[in-house]
Length: 82
Image (tube, rainbow, N blue to C red; front, side, top):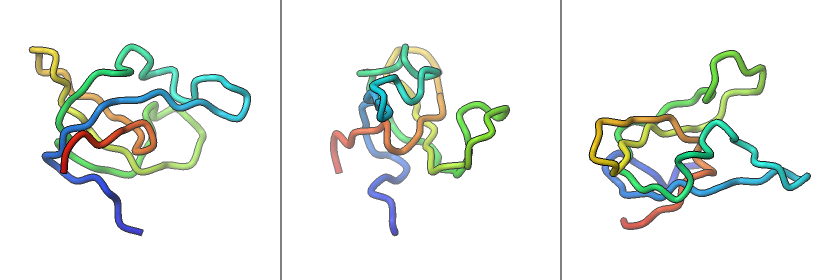
């Protein structure tokens, strides 16, 4: 299945909750609702020490006025433009 994301797209980081209502990716909590531009895609983990199966993720350059680039799971992104 082809991803709806690609480099250069503007996205918002959204919260994702598990079946128990807990944040699925607490590591990215401080970035929820921030926007940015996708700069690179990969299959991996947010935390390399996690034992979970790798998943599609994207490195997002945040619109914060700094050079902040963070890995975000694909399901925690919302497309803002095409």
